[in-house]
Length: 350
Image (tube, rainbow, N blue to C red; front, side, top):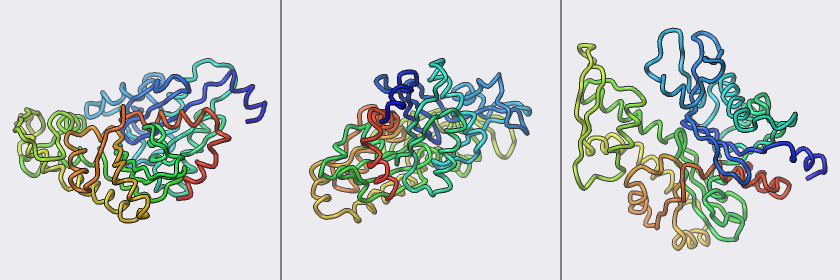
C-alpha cells in the first residue's frame, strides 16, 4: 500500500459490501456488519427519483412492497445476483455508502464487493461502475464463495480442500477452495427468491389464491422445511381469491410447503453434487473429513443441513451467523489489499 493510500485511509472508512438480490449488507473493518437491509428502493412511478428525499431504501421501501399506491413504484434492482436496474442500484449503493461513511472528510472509501462466481465481464463492469458512481474511491470484486469462506473462517489459503455452499436470495454459490483459489465451482440462479415464488405458484394452483412476496417469505420462514416435517404444523394466511377477486383466508400445512419447495431444493442439491464430481480425489478426501460449510440467509431454512448430508454423505455444518459471512469476508480483505490482490485475481479467473 502506498503512503498516499495510507494517508487517505486515516480519513476514509473502507467498506465490504454483500450486494445481494434480497439483502444488502455493509461491513466495516474492525466493526463488523453495520447495515443489513433489503435490496429494495421506492421511486416515483415513471422516474428514477427515490421517494422521501432519498430515504425510501431498504426496510422502509420493503414495507411498501405490494401495498404501494399508483404513483409509487417499488423496485428490487438486483435479480439473480446481478444488476437488473443500473440507476436504481447506484442510488441504493449511494444511500448505504453515505449512511455508513458519514462525514469522514473529503476522501471516498475503498470498497470490496462480492459478486456471483458465474457473472460475465459486462456484469462485473456494471457493479464496478455503480459503486464508483455511488461514491467509492476504488472497487475490488471478489467471488461470493471466496468471500463467504473467508467470513466463515475456513482455511481458504491452506493446502486443504474446503467446501462452501452459500445460498442467498438470488443465487446459490457452491465452491471447493484450496490454496486461496477456487478449484471447482457452480453458480445457480436458484435460491431464496425461487423458493418463495414456488410457494406463490403452489397456492395459485392448489387453492386459486394469490399471495404477495412478503407473505410467501413469511410462510417459508415460519413453516418451510427442506425435509418432510416430523410434526404437521399449520399456518393461516390471507390472499386474494383468483375466481371472485375477494380477500380470502386459507390454512396451509408444513407438508404442503415442503412439497412446493422440493424441486428448487433438489436443484441446489444437484449443484453441490456437480461440484463434488469435479473435485480432485485428494481434495475430495479432505471433504470427507471436513464436510460442507453452509452460509447465506436461505441456509437457515429448517432441515437443509440434514437434506444435504443425506444426499451427499458428507457432514454438514452451519457457519456462525451465516447471513453475514459474505460481508464479513469482504471487510476482512480490506486489512491488506496488496496481499490479497492475488486472491481476488485467482478467484475471478475461475
